[in-house]
Image (cartoon, rainbow, N blue to C red; front, top):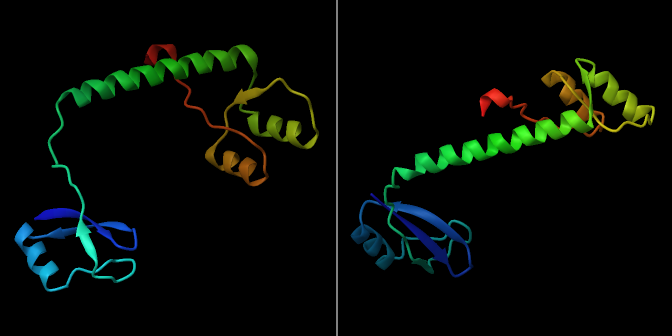
Amino acid sequence: MIKYILECKCGEIFESWFSSSSEYDSLKKKNLINCIYCNSIEVKKTLMSPNLKQKSNKITNNIKFEKIVKKELIKFRKYIEKNCKNVGDNFSQEARAIHYDKKTSKGIYGKATQEETQELLDEGIEIATVPWIKDSEN
């Protein structure tokens, strides 16, 4: 099997599989290859790159990236802890009080269930869920 990226005169690009390159040529010659968008037969192959196996350093790069992300999340957590008030399990109530009562707050953080989080979002209360990475997870 071979996959070709095809381009139509209408400007659309799409992929198609063929059993061989000679099958593509045969179907093209018989005008049996059509654009999936406009049904035109004016379709041509585009430049393709071979599907090569990636080097094993992809795993190393993923591990490095994961460490960088964890380090940044820890820095972000420390910033939140320093600059915001921890309201623990009362997060939903405190977020509503700030939103509806127009209470001033330098910012809060805490815990909420998925259901509570969805309810807050449905009410139009802007919140964000942040992965809470501990120092020991770095």
